[in-house]
Length: 218
Image (cartoon, rainbow, N blue to C red; front, side, top):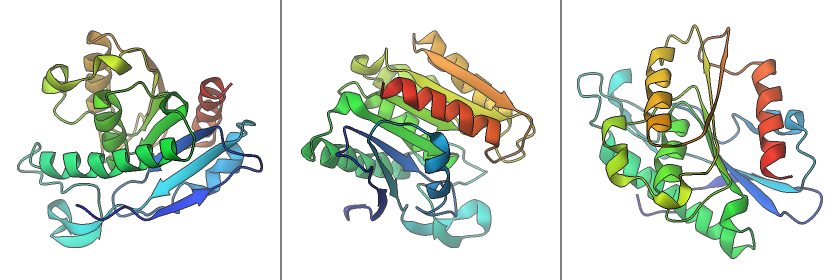
């Protein structure tokens, strides 16, 4: 994947001094989380960048082409590794663009839901410089057993927000718990939230996300 990602951007009223790069889930698009931005009530001037994933065939959905950060093959859980690395590299280019626009990396949050959260975690944990934090919603660590071989020491103290629905039928909460435990075993600080919901977001979660982001951009 060499072409730059096309993005929906929401600019603050004043000059941005922080940025949130937020990746959508499988089959969604850049508009998916746009409506919640006003609900977060961050206060600080923060630019929101919502990139569109490429359109690709997805094995778990019968080969149907849709926006996806990586292919999912239920017969081979680790088969999407090459796609994940390519998508993470494309999002890393967006981080670089924010730096070029005057936003320091320690004021950039990577966020993602479901597949998008996999990309946020993959890139954020390997990025060579510390970011403001990682927001991982209804998601998991891909190939968590080998994270320690690739993780960047620069970001080991970067805060991580993980949230999951207790009744999630798409990504069981046990998978997220395993990911959280892998992170804490490596010394990462994880703020964990779970909610009585499925594979979605809820008002209580949005309030908690807003509180966490306000801390990042205080």
